[in-house]
Image (cartoon, rainbow, N blue to C red; front, side, top):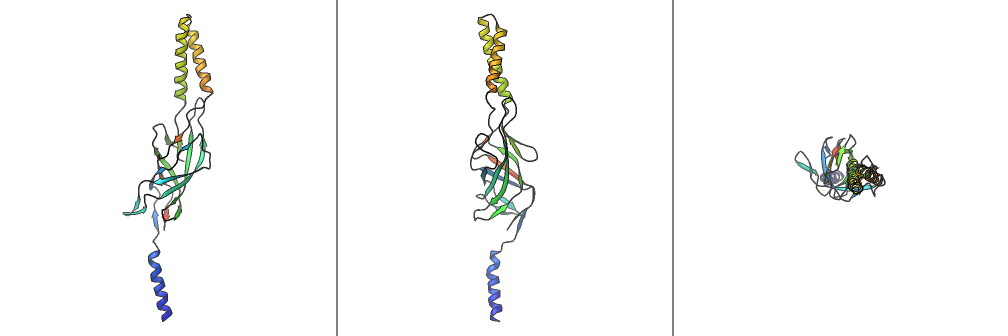
Length: 201
């Protein structure tokens, strides 16, 4: 009898500590902000990053992922911009969500949108972030050098020759340099969408 009473007392004490599982459905959006700057200039595939949850995630009116939780991830792929065409690219893979109390949950999610820089966008099914195109800058710099060459050519009565020389010089100079690197500064908003159900216990 005493053993049974002791057993029931232990079970009653443990019951409040056992939280029911809560399943966030696939499609749920998780809003967060980068906690450090990422750039195609200095980062490499495999580099880790962290993002703080910026809006609470609720389920049936109850907060299950509060502000202050952290999304941990890594740079899955990275490519620098080309010299004439192409853009800088990064794919930021979400690995897990860590709550303030230390509990950690593996997460399957894909980046949907990012904001903070007008020249970046998310493309494709895998959530690749693209940076600014270098093509417009190449054309602009080449045209500027060609115009300057034409003005100098007027002094020697050969504006077309000056334009050709100036344009060629501008293009060659541009070819020596890469396009703009893709940079996501600290505080950039990242919106991830769950691709699988996330169970929180």
